[in-house]
Image 1 (spheres, rainbow, N blue to C red):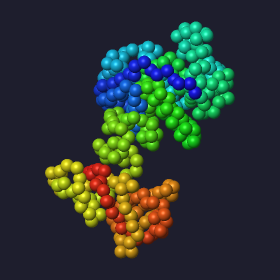
Image 2 (spheres, rainbow, N blue to C red; image 1 turned 60 degrees about the horizontal axis):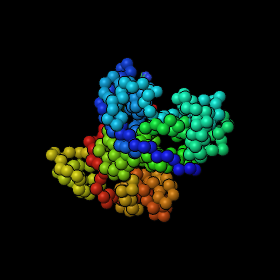
Image 3 (cartoon, rainbow, N blue to C red; image 1 turned 90 degrees about the horizontal axis):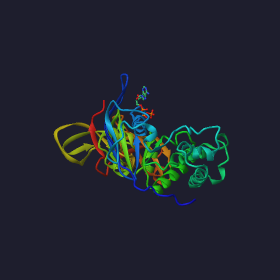
Image 4 (cartoon, rainbow, N blue to C red; image 1 turned 90 degrees about the vertical axis):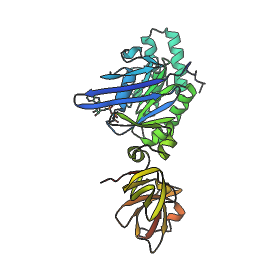
Length: 354
Ligand code: ATP
């Protein structure tokens, strides 16, 4: 497709102390978050944590009880939605069923009284941008889900918004279309350089597409960081367990080390009191070896391709997941006695779960 016209100046978006309650439900409980110019920022978190409410506040569909929304330093909290300059794409394609693809894309331009000829030219360019130049005359019911979502994206971009807001845009699509649209949206976003907020509850989607991921919990920000940092250095046990797979192994914390699985490993920092803790480890950081004298048992394995994820039950009943090279896993049968080792420092040491 044609090269997209880049946005003139990418916007900074700031949420400051956003609070919003619906009756007794607190949807946002003091959300502070900044999206940097031109980045794709994913809002990730469990259902009900306030992701959609935050996005709707940026669009102007929802208003905070207190706190502010700033775009390029300008307070837009009380600016009505139609003057916000935000393009939004929803989970359900929400195209106008009685309008052709081209007219759907041109709709906002018509509302803004852009002249017919210019409207059609611009809508055609946008259809081309999302790879659907030849589908302009089709109606939504004549298009696949993925195509409808690309039309919705073109429609959102038609007014050259300062920010692009995507609310679970891929959730309704099947796995294969979802994967190709991920790349397409990301490619287009980078090409345009448009500041984008992307709401998802799918951690893989967030990690694979975003420049930074904001993990939310109960209406607040838990951590905002680049995907690799979030995965490798989660700030809290909640982030550690929400992003990627994590096993908890009982251990004992003492000063600068933790004793776990009969090993003593260094940790970051220094614990004031010795105590029982849980050690959080990623499957790729766990070594499992067949060992007749071992007191752990292999209880399950799942083929993932080059790696196989095995589940091992320790003598105390704790289950630990480990990724083994598939050729290695093939030599260890179900029920086999194994030993488990942690060659690296743990990702996190957390309070003991009950
Ligand atoms: P999901 O992933 O399920 O969409 P979310 O993180 O986007 O969740 P929100 O939709 O922002 O969460 O909702 C946060 C909380 O506020 C939820 O408990 C929700 O039920 C509640 N809520 C949101 N909008 C309204 C409303 N208009 N009226 C009443 N309660 C609402």
